[in-house]
Image (cartoon, rainbow, N blue to C red; front, top):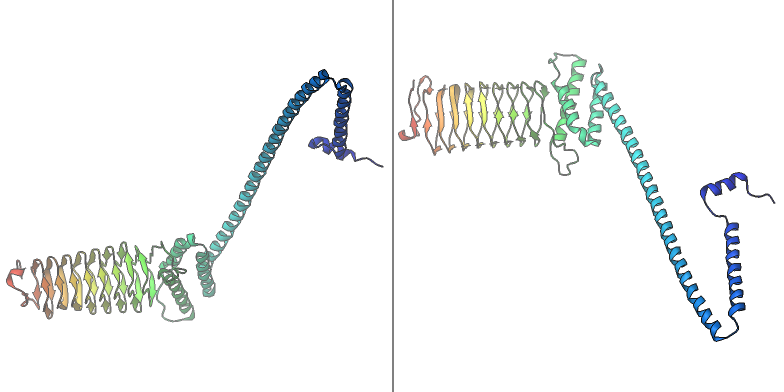
Amino acid sequence: MAGPAPNDRDDSRADGVLSSRTILICALAVAAIAAGACWVLFAWYGHGTEADRIRLDGIRTVGTIVVGTGGALALLLAARRQQTAERDLATKRAELRVREQANNDARHDATERRINELYLKAVEQLGAGQAPVRLAGLYALDRLAQENPRLRPTIANVLSAYLRMPYDLPVSGPEPRQEREVRLTAQRLLVQHLVPDASQDLFWSGVELDLSGAVLFDFAMNGAALHNARFTGARFIGDAWFHEVTFTGTTRFDDAVFENAAWFTGATFTGSTHLDHVVFRNEAHFEDTDFVGATLCRLGRFQSDAWFNRALLRGVVYFSRTEFERNARFTDADFLATPVFEHEVTTQSATFDNTRFGDEAWFDRVSFANYTTFDNATFEGHIGFDGTTLNGAPYRPPQLQSDQFSLEDTV
């Protein structure tokens, strides 16, 4: 019978593993030695005399000690083998963790490469000449942001940047109409992610909207939550809806132009609000609006009626060189801080009926071209009408007591 292959024998020696044949031979040798030792002992001390029994007891004691020592050595060897096995297992686990981490890193790198490729491809589509390709790029970006929350602020900025791109209002033609549809889609995608919903699945938190200089069509952000929103120089074509929007941080509508009606009814401005050089060509509705911080409107123009009925103005309100070309209505408004109307503020008529002024109020060099009423208005501080006129004549509100206001420098 052929023996084991040389390679097998070499592998056994290299691995340090005893073969079954070697273990059997060693066991037989130990048994033979034990049998021989027993035969010698009985041959020498097996005569039954007292001296033989004493010698056998001594030998038995020595044998017990030897066996006990061997057992202890066996326990030590077993502990050593257990320690070695545990070290091998720990080494294997460490190697497994390293391999798993390497696999995870490889998967993460592959995912990141895929995301970057999708992102770059979608952004490239936004610059395509065909409107359907640009639409596909918008939807691809939206899907990518929805699946990867950390990309949402970046992609929101990309969508906003697309809307900030220069755009001239077209007269006619299919291509301009297609571009308008692309822009309406970008607006809708932004809006749907800035309005908190019950499940919060679509809402993108941590986004700061910047639509400075953008041309926006029928812009509706009702119920949105905006932080540090910037609409500086934006142009709103069609009605602009900000009904019940919550503005946090600094909100800027400087140099913005509202071509049609602007609706801010029920909105809340928790920070400062900037309306410098703003132009409202149609009605401006701020009914039931809560202005928590300072409200600044310098060189603004309200070319139609401005409605601030029931508005709650907690911070300083500052109108300077602002034109109200028709009616400025502040009926039932509540000024908790000082309102200032100064430096050539003009208005056709103004209504402050049932308005409460919780602090000082200043109407300096205001020109009222028609009637102005303060019926049932209440003042908790000083009110000044320095240089204020009604139809060119010095204005003295007939509804107020003389000790409530001053007329210094009245024209």
